[in-house]
Image (tube, rainbow, N blue to C red; front, side):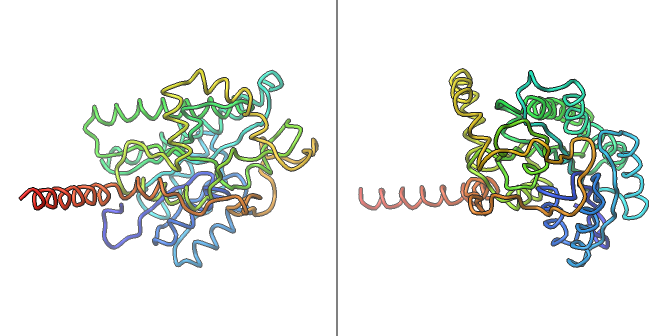
Length: 335
């Protein structure tokens, strides 16, 4: 998306130290981007920086808590000073708590909301402050099927994802009203094999897991990269996301009943959880956790639905071509 042919595209990714954010860093690095890496944990950020440099790119490590608007603004200023004008901003940072709502504390709910929702607000503010005067740029909001269909045990996280969708739709309308060339999009993710399930605070009796089917984080990174370079209002990733969103539009009451019965067990696996396990709600955990979680054997490396979404023009041409051949054969038989 960089307009100057002699410079690398400048991309900011929040939550860049691990999980989907880390996979997205690798994806952009392979395409030569200069990257601003935001997260709280310096160990993961430094490891991500090394990976970018090994791929031949440039990376700026920016330890920051996205719940602090000043830290986000300062990070954006450093990116523009050291790497150049920001072309793409990817909001991805998150925290969560696996817990029934009645067991949540106000402080926990506030923290999830400040990071997972307001972190996107502050990131979008910092990006637009720079993109609007230049009249160019792309903001990618990393969403979830949970932005349309909430599930039990993740009330704060689901609430934040719903809020991001409403906020994004509002901003999109304002950009259209201004006639701005700045674009904003949202990518709705399926369950991904990321380390978050081993570091999220949890009150579950057993270990937390993503609700199957599970995809590798590279699938999500592919969708983010595509969204950043092809203007689509919204992208669903994985047939499970598309099905959940559609089903909720058609029969939300049935999904309420279904998730009341199955939504608890579907988020747990493999024996009891350690109630004293360290988590990252308030502070980052030390060490580099990479992109992948503990579900390698069950995670799909590809999504046919995403391939179809990103190749819809060619699919449409193929359908037209097949229809044309069929019509020609029908005429020939009728002659």
